[in-house]
Image (cartoon, rainbow, N blue to C red):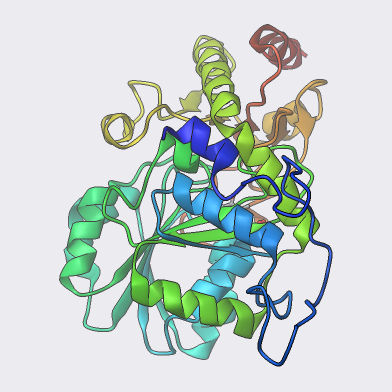
Length: 376
Ligand SMILES: *Cc1c(COP(=O)(O)O)cnc(C)c1O
């Protein structure tokens, strides 16, 4: 079955008790057993919940994965993955990872003795071998990156990482499985903040991990129940509902982003537009190979920080807020907002950078609003 059909039906048979077409919210903490150990597959809701099972089967299928695990947040998913490795182990990560992941790596795990090497997207795509050692257990990729929209070659990096037995994790939050399939490109694990496009409506926090590696899947099942960063049933239901429309939403996010990027490129006050769909983007060729379309995120540079800070407060339809991937368009200033935690890093976000999460409103209205704000 095609992606769009699986998004609506996978893991979501009509409810066996009532025929309800929509997967119920199984708002329960425990399950009654007929006799000791005789039950219908569920014993305690941290370990399992039917609404969560539906979500896990659905998103795993969309990622082309045999196994999927849902978590309470994207960072909850990342924390759980970090328990696959131990202090002294080495992690190579793309240097402009999501700010919260960077903070976790450098302020939570590095002080405990985990070792990190942060590399630029070019270096990961073409020179990764020089940075691996026998203790390299994880290669942590994000593509497109946040907020620079850099592109990493997933297939090339995976091949090199596998040479030393490292697992390749791809944070697929920006692309979604509709636009990019990391496992098919050779990665071992696809990670999501389902808070973003998969949920799609800015009303829930969630995370997800998908894999075809049986050993990793077994460890994740154990870690999910043992660490306990699990999502509640209503949150699972919201994400499941969001995923049903992922394909149509992403088509619109992408076409709107192409229109907005073209407008910004032609505007005299805009110094540079960062969008992988533009031929001038350094990652354009790789993105064309590994993505179906270029996504709904755009960053652009104005002349200086003050201009950027002023502009983000002047738009009307574009709301000034952190986060991304919802139906509504958002604008933000990464250096002072989402990426303030990377301010001291050598790859700190340029202060004149503005990030857009292009929603699915009318592209004409979105462009008109930016035009007014840029004139102001
Ligand atoms: C938001 C985000 C995360 C963290 O997810 P939460 O759901 O906020 O915990 C991780 N990676 C990327 C790329 C993100 O955008």
